[in-house]
Length: 142
Image (cartoon, rainbow, N blue to C red; front, side, top):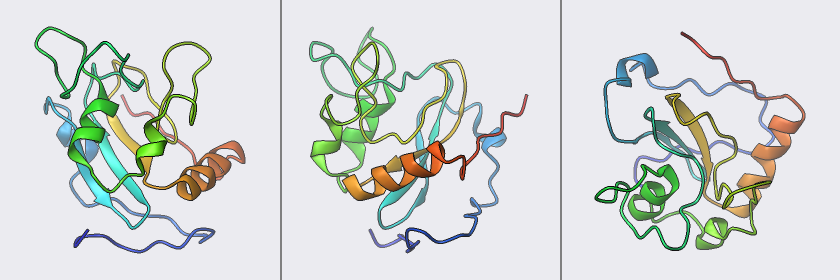
């Protein structure tokens, strides 16, 4: 996209998010793209949005009339630059449930905050490897 920034994989550097603090977003009811890089997105997840893929019978649109708030449904509907194969349940399966698609990590449904979203298979593999090697960390602020 036109606002994308390039971050080469394997780069040992921190990516600073824009000055708008995530805590200031807490009252917002819908997800928001915080940072859009070539192969990775940072998306704000509001509280009460689920991180799992929607079940096949849960329809479309981020918020169905009376259904659950599902972040990956919103991401799939709003962000067209993500490889469709990443949304297949088998790509990033869960021990129970439907899987986590292009999300490189997740946070609890009640929790709000930034999430890393891969746009490509290579980006997902790289991000998950960094989490596994504890090169990336999460910090919870109450």
